[in-house]
Length: 394
Image 1 (cartoon, helix red, strand yellow):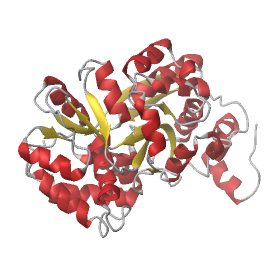
Image 2 (tube, helix red, strand yellow; image 1 turned 90 degrees about the vertical axis):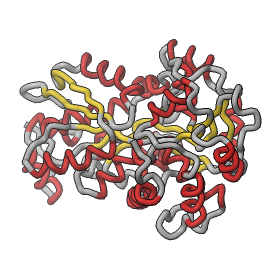
Image 3 (cartoon, helix red, strand yellow; image 1 turned 45 degrees about the vertical axis):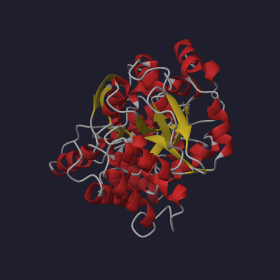
Image 4 (cartoon, helix red, strand yellow; image 1 turned 60 degrees about the horizontal axis):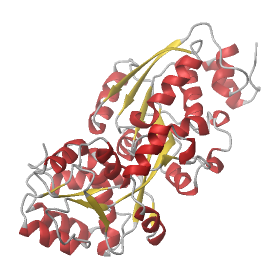
């Protein structure tokens, strides 16, 4: 039987596990235990498009660890309350969540997640050093409650139908003027459940020259005034980006706010015509984005062991190569040295056909920053819901 070191940390760990299970949890030996477990994964970010093939491949390689994986999807704003209720009832029906910064922020604020680091750091050796530098900065936003698994430079970008929009707006003032001249033809989704939506509102303070782009409560005076003015010519706000792209592709809207992945992937899938164009805002700052792997409170130790091993696998180059997908979270990999040539041929072909050569120049031209800190992000969503999207979100 393996034992842990006889210090305070080791003693607390020993209360949780013993033998092979302890080895699995703390990296002391191969993660084997008496019976394989079933893992329930909830995706609130669309991340399974990037990781499901790798996750299923891991399970097939390790049936002695995980007998089955159940996948479900849920809207990010609904999950914190659901977890709170489960944990209050002493239940543990969700073992791992794949999330963007939205549920990450809410989950930390509402206290429904366990801290993955530093308690389980031995499962993720050289974590920060293995990330791309910009992805390492996004990992800081997890505040040790999660591990970044995919990365995207994001946006905000203007996506438009070139047959209807002959002079693309490239400043907030031009976008507002176009919207007022073409009421109900601009659309974006509720930021609390939309990557492009939150990237747009987080990018505006930099473009508008607000007092403090990192403080939505006291530093976004120009941004909130602008969003309220823009609201006057927007018919409604869908609760997710998929509905936005459907309306854009069908021709009921002519412009939306997007980001790299949400530009490429809907065109690959045929939801949005291939001919649609994107443009950056003049003087913009890229609001970088990431997806994270997190573990809710209440998950039993033997399942935590399996989830940690899966999480570690998803950061290997082999698994990361799948995250190029069909451009959904372009480029996708969070770790260094994972080239497109390592991705499945289907991914390579899709990105070569539907990617945009101009992205490379724009990514070099404009500065980059991280999404808001979790607490500030929750505040930004609250203010938008109350002051901008109220009565118009559906």
